[in-house]
Length: 61
Image (cartoon, rainbow, N blue to C red; front, side, top):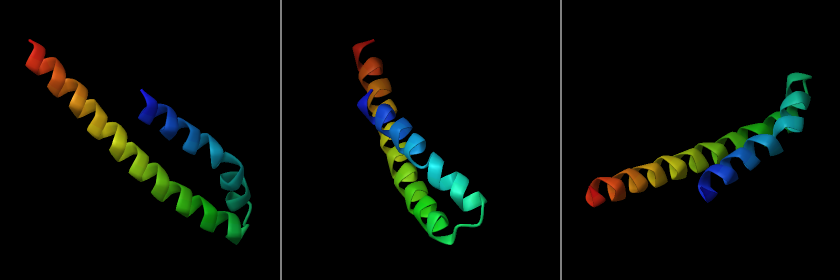
């Protein structure tokens, strides 16, 4: 599922900034917060897609 792969890529992309933020880098913390918002939106897209798949399976049965 394309939406899930996008979500995984977003999580992996912010790993370096997360480590920097834990070390006290305030700019990295800002980038992580923005990335977390993007991850939240991507997770919502995955949830919607799962519901679509489930609904289409229910209609086939």
